[in-house]
Length: 211
Image 1 (cartoon, rainbow, N blue to C red):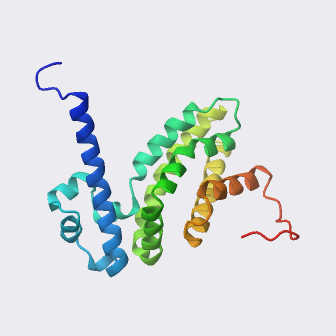
Image 2: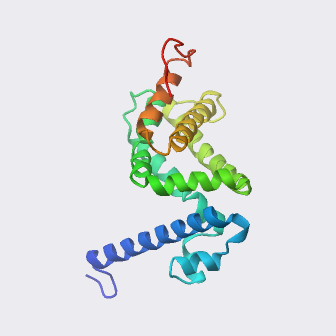
Image 3: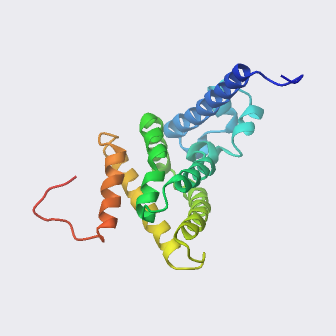
């Protein structure tokens, strides 16, 4: 080991501490905003609730809004990596669903925090422009990797269309999940949405009653 380098155990503890602080700040931000509203909560109050300094807050999040909406840049990067790992013979829509698997598992494992986040976003429309901007960045990245996967230019109509409809399917599943208070499996709801897309978006069977 070179002088000044951290042992794996030390590095592991440091990473866990960072994750705990990140989560504590996000949780504090969401709970305070859910109770008081976006305009009535400051970074200083969030930091105090998480038992850290305001300076520490800005080591983790550029702004209060970012603490509320989550780390979508990281999620996007992980999605792109997982998408690249799906065998090339898998159709692009199915590959997107497969790549979402880890994200969905983490959301279900952290269900209470995610449900609270969706409540906060629905109650505070001022967050929507920031969320839309982050979503646009993610869609651009997805469009590029879809184009590369199916072997067409980035300006071809298929990649942005697939990115848009699959994103809408995922958001629809998330909204249904939140509306049910997480009672239904998010994975099942996402599967249902993607299966409907894969089938060509047929009209629902009126003889069946679904939630």
